[in-house]
Amino acid sequence: MAVAVAALGLVAGPALSATAAAGGQGNGLPQTGGDLGPNVIVFDPGMPQASIQSTLNTIADQQVSNQFGTERYELLFKPGVYGSKADPLIFQVGYYTTVAGLGQTPDQTVINGSLDVYNQCFGGVQTNCNATDNFWREVTNLTINVAGQSGCKGNTEFWAASQAAPLRRVIVNGLVSLMDYCDGSPDYASGGFIADSKFTGSTIINGSQQQYITRNSDLDGWTNGVWNQVFCGDNGAPAQSFGASSGHSGGPAPYTTLATCPVTQEAPYLYLDSSGNYQVFVPSAQHNSSGTTWGAGSTPGTSLSLDSFYVVNQDSTVQQINLALALGDNLLFTPGVYQIPQTIHVVHPNTEIIGLGFPTLVPTNGNVTMDLTGQVGSTDISGLIFDAGPVRSPVLLKLGVPGSPRSDADHPATVHDVFFRVGGATAGSADTAFVDNSDDSVLDDVWIWRADHGAGAGVWSGDQGDTGLVVNGDDVTTYGLAVEHFQKTETVWNGQGGDVLFFQNENPYEVPSQDAWMDSPTQKGYPAFYVAPWVTSFQGYGLGSYTFFNQGVDIHNSMAFQAPDTPGVQFHDILTVFLTGAGGIDSVINGTGPAADSATGGPADVVSYP
Image 1: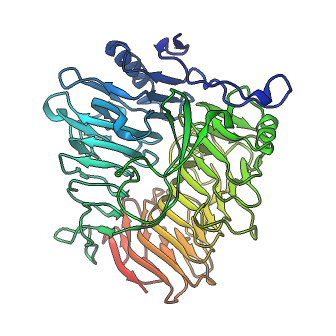
Image 2: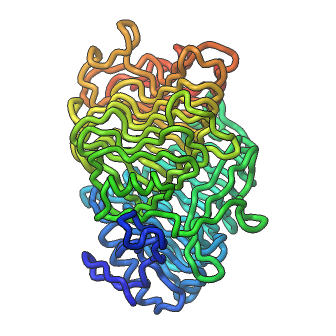
Image 3: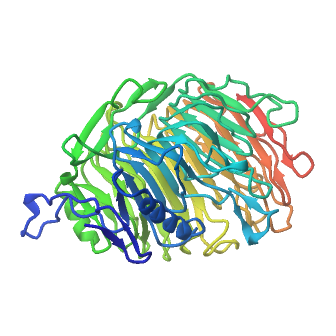
């Protein structure tokens, strides 16, 4: 039986489905394990390659330029081999597209060819080709034996992507470039995130990538850095070298390198078991880890039957979703854009909330989109986009309740590849995008964006948003955190014992006047990252904040980072950059560090503070 994707006229393999749990049959209760719908497309190695290629090309033709569209796809490859050196399988990965293997380890699904992301040349002008808008896509749990094409693009895996475009759990044998140097110029890129992966056969080309984090991976070399390249628990990572003149001609490479990662937990994923049944695998937490979780065999963790998941589709109501959660079901969101008129309440610990193909949740009544109440240990949220809605919400995602029972550090609440937007696709407003009240939680690849382009963007009165992230929990760890363009303090850290490995920020562009952007009568602007005065323990590694005030007004930010002057609160390898425009950032942290403005440009580097 073939699945037809009506909007595209595609034909591919059978849709992923499972038998509904018996308890839900005919009794009015939400049914679990249901059909995942037409935009989850499953490929089998026995299918004709020409048919697979045609389907992939048709999706790419639609999605490569579909930045704010509503179409979403999850492309799943059953274990086996696709393409060959003589006849490689080559396709582009566009917006809102996840490509995933269905093996239990990434070596079980092999693609001979390449899965590429290239520059977009805006306005069709070859002097305006960049990767800085290549967001919201993913490749995970498969092997790429790089092959095919010729000339500049020959035998190269191009992943010229920026935020919200992770590479997870992949093996790449051959040349990988994180920039596109073949299509026009200037080829800017603003990524990125790699985790639990292995690269062999060539040095990774960082090229123009301004910043990047790579963790728990095996590397075969890394060419260079621009402003802020962070490595954590990577075999073969470059040595620590961040210095006071990193990012400047003749200065040391801007590498922040940690031998191990303090606490990690990989994202859950679908796979086929030995009987051909679909399972969801939930990896275990790792402490002081390095290298991949699967290098010595299967990743430690637990398998869950798809029958334990309530499958959310466009016909689901919030009442049905909340009833399923109350009954102890997990959630699996199928690809699509969901209007959420009231809060989704996650009431039990050990709940998996997984999105396929970047499902997007939009609150419609000024409500909180989703909250997790009580003890939230072992709850995973992965693969979702939270958009602000037309009525201002107090918060989009709330993880835990202040003062709730502490989670087990071996079973943390985790947030993987979850992205927030205030504006862009939908004009909207929110006081705060994400509030994390959960002790010991792990945030792994989170981008929180008040839009600088798209719906509602470009004016100070549009897409209102004060703060991107508030962390109230203790011992929270983040990897690959980016918070951009919010109108007041962008990140507020109130918890003790935090670890932040990589942070990227841009101040809001469209500030109309200095008077409109003052933290206090004497402090210009707002910090990108603020650690509360009562915090006595905190570690930050590789944090950067950039400025582009585009209204032609002399706007200044007194400091990018603000924190208490106490020995236990420490920052390592932090920087500011003046991109272009007017004004600038007057100091890096607490009045320390040089300015980044039109006269100096930057980066302005601080190796350690205090």
